[in-house]
Length: 414
Image (tube, rainbow, N blue to C red; front, top):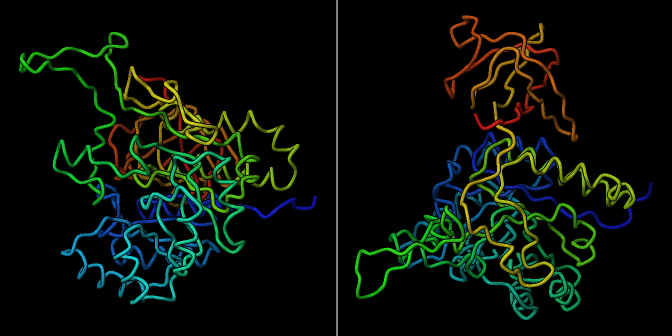
């Protein structure tokens, strides 16, 4: 079957070296990471210099691009460190830098002009003139503001040069503030979202207090659980790949640099399958729609919405009665090695037991159910269950996984 169109890039987040390797194995065309400095995910593990060097090497050896974020809103006192950081990145040779601040952009152009710059969504990119402004400065990719509809993106695509790429978030958490430029965290806790230290106050439960009645709180109630008035559903466009392609989006970006390897494997694997199916045969994509939806709901999420893509979202895009995630499956671990006898080693993340049915998630949209036959603790003692997170476990099951496969299990809530 002849490919119908240019295949969009699948861009996956990684908050650690292990998760990055999972993203690459499960189908990412490109990954984006943050270093220990100047990234908007200060609470993520992020990458040391040594980890970044290994990440660049691993990606390039596996035909994957790697973009490094430096997208804080910088103050004067950041600039000396920014210059040192870019000098180090110049040596590493990532495929692009993700930047929002014009001053940081100027330093990047001066210190490592050979590394392309992608303009972050934090720069509020919501009109064609903004795209053209950056184009005139040599930028060839801009990340859309999440407030754009597909109609608006289509209009921008028509108004900008053919060699300018449009990147858009298609999956993950949504922010209540314009392109993520939020002041709530700074105002309420002193931790600045625009410096990577957001405390996510949009997920909190709120009360009213009348001015003349201090410390007398009145609940804002949707039901007995109260109301989370700012809490947005998560974005999911897995069923709308055709519309995203038709709008001229070059890179499909997934949010989640603080997510687990299970989340990354599930989301990357599903979007990889959906993109490949659609760009090969639209009828195959339509046939497999139920499979994509079933699989994507095996990751943790806050219900799903299509965000602004089909117009401004209404009240049904918010979750007023809860701040919890839907979790249908739990992450057991990532297979590190497999012996000749079929036993496999992994660092255990959640409890399970001999006799349990687990699922092996493999690259290529392959899912294998199997039953655990034996388990051994780090000291070699045979055990019936593994209740201690981060313990190295050796196990045997009816099916044999491969290194890099993800182990998961249906979560019954117990």
